[in-house]
Length: 380
Image 1 (tube, rainbow, N blue to C red):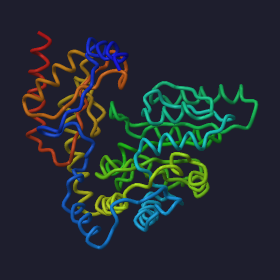
Image 2: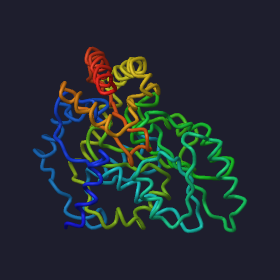
Image 3: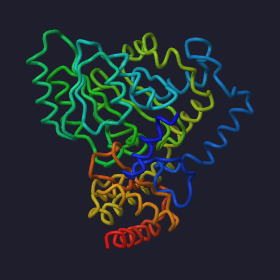
Image 4: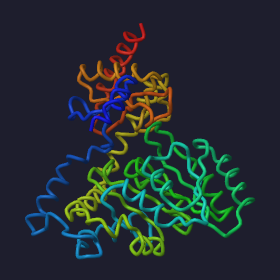
């Protein structure tokens, strides 16, 4: 295994070596945006599930006895919740994203994707049989230009797929979904929206940035992905779509067919969390988070964190700078991590500040002051 030593040393020399560390200090880095991951309602729901005879493991894939009532109940509830004809539950958002593109996109198709779209989508796109084109971030005109190029060159009636995140995981900015949906209608394309960081937080009722578009237009040319391990506070991933899309996934998606089903209790807790998110408490938590987002926008705009969402990039540029500033802040009692290439573009190493509804205003003020001090000391 010495063949890896040189590569690991190179990563260390570039300040890009990664290692695991346990949570410590004030949470400014997780995706638990609504503070539900340790919520008493979900804890009690898990206890009740097992006391009522719920199994720990599914025991097999969904098509081979691993499909339980908990999975069926979640998918029925989630389909209604997100206004979809059908819904399919996966063990993770990553699995759902990769499997989606590998299954549905044929060699006659073309996938046009935002340059900042998540690694899971990229993995699925690259492993599909379709042609693919990357376009400038959050640029609807770039999408249209790419579509027109495809239409000019296309020799078959292949499908055009447009792939975006609703809220981008490293910059916190929001995709221009209205403009992109208009393009999908104009050019008979399919719009895939990864709502990983929008679910639970964005939209009038916390159902994602796409909530209003879907209420009006449905899923005729839209597919949404809802990760369950972020604001929902549990784990897994939901694909919401038309009946034909979900049935196709069940019949042809290798990542679904040949994977053991998620733990039944996991599906049960996702449903309970969605119920909580749609309750008065869920609305209160979204309001609390919205207030924090506005405050953070004022505090961190000079660092690039001006999108006004729950994801606040503190862009420091240099890899070593990001690592050192993160370490100084960790010593002050904040759990914040350095994000470096290739996760983000070269020259944009950063701290990714992640806000939660449970975070107190005073903590955010103190963090801003400590950040300024840590950055200035290193810069000097």
